[in-house]
Amino acid sequence: MNWDRIQGNWKQVTGHAKEQWGKLTDDDFDVVAGRRDQLAGKIQERYGVAKDEAEKQIAEWQRKATDSWFSTPSKRG
Image (tube, rainbow, N blue to C red; front, side):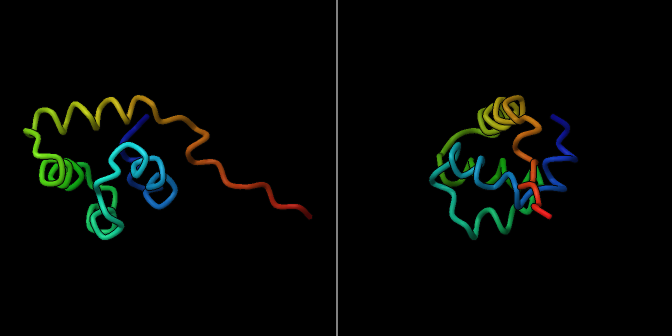
């Protein structure tokens, strides 16, 4: 999945990010606002891992991203 798409739809994917990184707070996710470098920094800070490990976790999470993460409920007319 393209990171630009993740960043542009950050509010929609935050739930999936919370499942992956439960130690991050809502405030952390607000600060990150979809910026990959900020997310890596917060993962490093909360989990005590090196930058390389944080980047690896993000890359794995990004690979799991599917179109269903971005789907919006259908509107009934």
